[in-house]
Length: 265
Image (cartoon, rainbow, N blue to C red):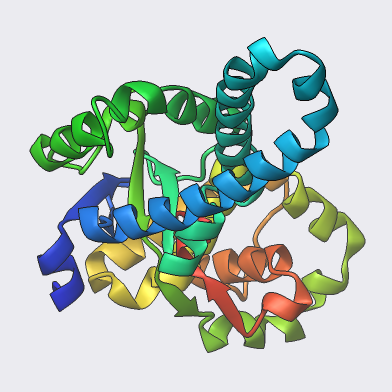
């Protein structure tokens, strides 16, 4: 694989799979992350104002608690916004989606509620003393552009690349196995990490050197036979078998274009 201008500019994060194949992700720059945070902050402030308007009667009845209630509501909305959206949107908030960024685990797979909660609960420390000074300095000094919350949660923020599904996946639609409910059901039961590895391999196969590509699909082909408890049809290569599994994972509307960063970022 060759470096692109984007990866040279923003830095990369490399993930080594158990098959000793490297996948590389472009790290998000400080500037793009700041713009995403700025947009999210505006939305959080709007949400906080809406909640406070709903609590106006309470604040009028207890004027002494008005300021304290405002701070509590702001932090609850701020935390809830980040945790809920990053959990539901696989590492994205509105700001990150607009800027084309995504939070993933350092292992290259999508984050869950646990990771979203940890990185967002650490935000008050990263914000010290103002405008994310602690978080910004930490990210600049970190090799993977991680603020303290990312270090705690084991996450990184990457630039999302939109990758077109290879034609081989579309061609797999002709295989009879895709019409077999048992095969499709077993594929859907694969773990999240296995599904993401299969999709990543399918989407990024052209980026791999031939030796690494053969090694990766050989290992994946054998592993998928074990996990699915099914023998690979003799007329299929390991790569074609893996692409067939990938085709079963892709919903029909997404068969033409996929977000590569959503698979592993």
